[in-house]
Image (cartoon, rainbow, N blue to C red):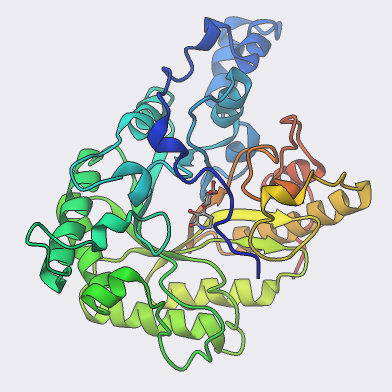
Length: 395
Ligand code: XIL
């Protein structure tokens, strides 16, 4: 499998100075321009402005629709696209441990602060991502302390607690919830055990680190919704094997240990052959534990490899055929029909990016807006399902 983290950009958030978001040029956004010359009477305009349109409008009352991005350097039309289509934004990189806390005595708040402010100003919610992870986490967390001795469990715990209290505390009341733990389960297990990943935090603190992270996040912001987030955890749900079975064991243990956990994020980095029966069964299994479910990082590759992301050095994006676009649209329609059937369990569906240009899998055209920010066939297909314009497709 291609390494999931070869994509450049890991440290981008830490080193650039962020211009004030949405201030660029001071031009009217395309959406604003459209409204201004729509020819409607002012009262009609008021009515139309109240009823949300775009992707989020099609799923009002069902679940939130989200996107991921860091906003730094986004054009006015990209910002307008976010306002038009999404209820909630997940910072794609800038709140991860390494970018936000690059060394023990330094936090990098500029990009995440600007993102949170822009979202507040534009009535868009924010989802925090992520606190405890094996990737994009500074090595300093595991380096010897001031006494030069190797890091102890106590020191590692103190560093993690301080990180969580500081980051979650800063955005308290301004962030709806957090992916507290990200990707703690290894791949290719039988499902008979939790099969936890042998990562730094696990080695330094032990399996209770997950519960501790939830408790500290809750202490820092008691009203925040706290989720476990992972990829491939739907896999094996129908037969209750593999990564799904491991996730059920882990979640039951977290609940038994008193972790304040409210939900599970199924990342949803999928492809045209993803098994939708597994997706559906995973949703109902998690709901049966009393947990909410979200699809936290949705993208469906329409070409190329089925896993991870192509490294950018593998070349240019291959042109995508009309046939592949149509297949992708049909797949997204089936997915959203499935989500709609389970909207009582589903809190949110977030796309991992706003356009194929911005996507971490941009070589594989996985999103619903193309590289020019034009809607692809999948966009209309998802709208039609949400608005009930087509018969829901069964998986
Ligand atoms: C990805 C980002 O999209 C990339 O920009 C970055 O280079 C690597 O990380 N699972 C996650 C996300 O939880 O944080 C990852 O995001 C994609 C996989």
